[in-house]
Image: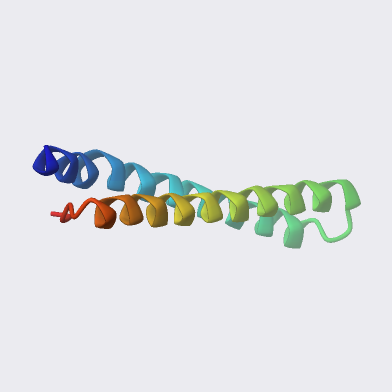
Length: 81
């Protein structure tokens, strides 16, 4: 069972978390680009701020997910592959 969980983590969960982390970083970068490019348009700057906030929240959630997964794996003595 431990080997199955370790393989599941290595093959499915970790790549999914990396993909979502990259997506959150892209959302943040897009928001930053909108914020800087539309410095004269207040409505577009607000949109950029929201995208940056969503990107930061996504990054925070991914870091928390990785931390929680590692905590559970270490608690039960399951080694990662």
